[in-house]
Image (cartoon, rainbow, N blue to C red):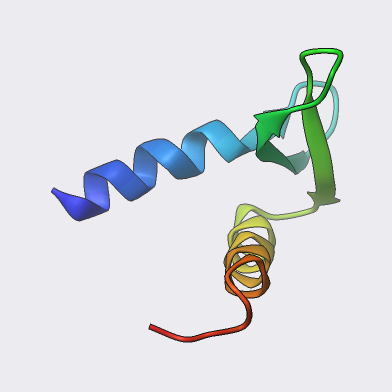
Length: 65
């Protein structure tokens, strides 16, 4: 059940760029314009997931589980 929740959360943050063969990582929070902040564009989904994990790590003060 935890894996399903993480997959849903991941799908919301990582999206395929329609015109390019790339994936874009977005923040969960919206800015004042109502858009999600772009956290980077990556050539593969694996790279985007790795960067997402790094963002989450540092967002929580660099503490491991």
